[in-house]
Picture: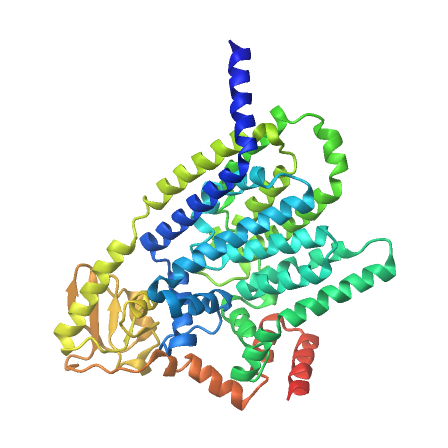
Length: 499
C-alpha cells in the first residue's frame, strides 16, 4: 500500500514537472490577484503616498513627499495616462512579473529550477507584506537580479540592478558590499569588474541625479531628506537605553517545512553543501546584511515605522538558501506549500480590522463634519491620518502646532492629551460622527482656510525654495545624522563641481 501511494505521488510529481510552465503561469495569476485584492481591501498608507506622488509628478497634484524613492510613483504616473485611477493595479502586475523574472534569472545563475524556487518564496508573510508599501517587491526583485548578476560575474548588469533597487527603496544600499563577490584571485580582472559595476550603477542613476539637480540643486537631496527624516543620529544608534524589536521572528516558522523537505528528501546533502559553499556564502552574506538592517531598525529608525517588514528579507534569503537544495522530486510539495501559503495569506488579509470599507465610512463622516461646521469641505485640516484624508480629497497635513491654528483638526478618535499638547492652543470640539472628531480653534471659529499642502511650511515647495537658496542643505542633513566630516566635505565638493 505504501509503495502504491509513493508511486501515485511520484506520478503526480512527474506530471507537474513536465507541465511546470503552466504552474508558473498559475503562480503569476494567483499572486497578481492577491496583491491587487490586498491593495483594494487595505488601502495601505505608503502605497497611497506613492499614488499621490505620481499624481503630483504627472498631473499637478497638491500632495508630495520628497523623501520617498520615486521609481514606483514614476511607473504609476506613466500608467495613469492610459489607466487613470487603475494605474496602481498595472504597477502591481508589473512588479510581480519583474519579481518572477528575477527568480528565473536567480535560479538560472545558481543552477536550480525556477518553478521550485517560486513555489517556496511566496510564504504567507511574503504574500501579505511584499507589496503593501509599494516598494518592497520591486526592491527584492532588483536585489535578487543584482545577486544573480554578481554570481554570473556580469558587473555591468549588477550595477544597473543595484541602481534600480536603490531608486525603489534607499535601504538597498545596505547590500552594496555584496559587490565584493566580484573580486577573485585575478587582481586586474577584479578591479576591472568593480570599475564596470560602479560605472554602470552611476550611469543608471543619471536620471535620479538629474531630477534632484534640476529641482533641488543637489543630486543627493531626496536621499538626504529620507535619511534625515527616518533615522536618528549615528551616535545614538546603539544607546544602551533602547531595546531590540523582536517582532518579525515568527516569520521563521515558514522555514520549518522547507527545511524538513530538504532534510528528509534530499540525498547527499553534505557533498552538495560543499559544492555549493560559494553560492551559500553569497546568500548568507545577503541574509546577514538584511539582519543588520533589522537590528539597526530597532535603534536607528524613528518610532512609527513598520518594523515587521524589515524582517521579511531575512526570511526571503533564508528561503533562497534552502531553495538551492530542492530538486524535481519536490515539485508537488512546493506546489502544496504555495497553496497553503496563499490560503493563510487570505486569512491574514481578511482578519485585518482596518480596511477600505471602514476607511470609507470615516472619510464620509469627516466630510460631513466639515460641511456642517463650515458649509464647505474645501478646507485644509490637520490630522494624524492626513494621508488617508488627502487621498480621498480632503486637503490635510500632519499636526503642526499652534501657529497653524487657522486649520481645524480632524481626529480619528478624540483629541488626547498628547495630541492636544502637540498642537497647543485652545481647540474646541465642533462635532463628532461615527468616531471622527472635528476641532476648531476657539469658540468663535466659523470659517476654514484652504492652502495646498505643497505650499505649507516643510512642504515640497518650501524644500525646493530652501535648497535653491542653499544647495548644500542635503549635505548638512546627512551630516546631522552621521557626524562624519569626510562625508560632508565630499558631498559639498560634488555639489560645488556640479555648479
